[in-house]
Length: 455
Image 1 (cartoon, rainbow, N blue to C red):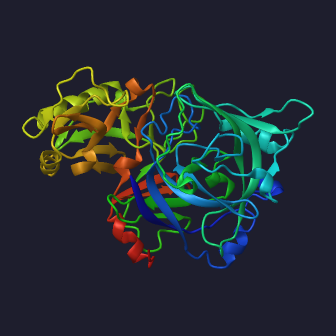
Image 2 (image 1 turned 30 degrees about the horizontal axis):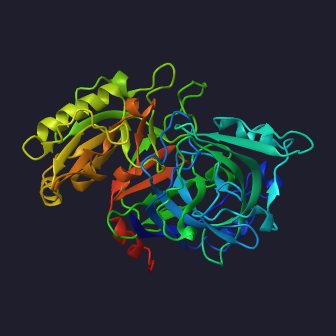
Image 3 (image 1 turned 135 degrees about the vertical axis):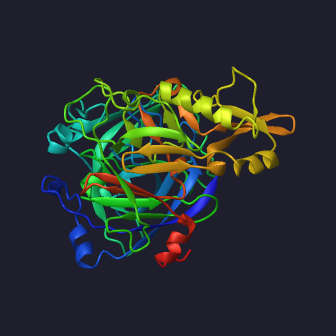
């Protein structure tokens, strides 16, 4: 899948005093005084290799489809492609030595005049990394560098240096912003193969742009207090806006508050965009799920996260079982069950069906809508977004299709996750200023036209 989308980035960066010693957010004031004009950036929904970067209890990139944005890093600028991930904190780039062969093309840190490794005595190394799953460590003498280590759910790992360099998320007339990131120079995995499907190495994902609320995220470093995106389905263009209020293109949003838990809990991600899931409906039937099942327990397990870095949506135990049973009951006249109890797509999707493309396309128009009922808002999933054709799986003339809601338990997660596949044709706004996330149905393929963007 390689659908070109157009993104508008509006930067209203605020400079944090602590970060100022490293130039974080430098130039943001100038951009704001200049009017914070819209700049253009393509956003792609594309297949990528499974890079490292997720906390151990999260599922990242396992389905090999992510949202990516082009970024220019360093001086002179080097063009790289980064995964846009609201579920991760530290941005990182594969640097020279981390991959044996393209794609992707790694970031050449030694060629950048503005690149600098962060010393281990700095506040960035000593306290800003407190929210990372593995805190930064000092390198062995005589080096004074700050090392970062990133773990992944499939036992992959990545190591590198905490560094700073300039980032440009738009055209040549944009103001560079200095930010901290992980310069990854060692990557290992028992299952890793470089299966990035981008034909052009320059288009393959070189790293990740961390957009959660942690102190080292790109959002926090640049002082961005509001951002939104609208992911188009099909071939249409989409939009990402950092700062501002939607430029007049945003629909009327329904907001749900961000959930905060002050005390540290072992299974609660305090810097994720956590919302309260209050129920799940299939068609007009609200599933009989106890409220306690949808609320984090005393360990923090059971939070609901809005995450652009995960493709599909995942539900925990009782909620997943209830959805599975009701969806299969209501679709019995429309879809033929696969009938293979041992078949589980990607280890987490076991509600699967068998049918030709034509039959499933016709059935999709009649499928019951699945609604994720939040406090004050709802994310509704309907039509062809409910089913995913499993690549390479056919039974004669018929393809295998699976429900796009997976089991968190089977995936080894302790949380509910709303992935980007179910955010298509939905305007999603992250309002950090007011501690809330907004949702509204939208024609994302037309939003760029309302903003005057030309492909």
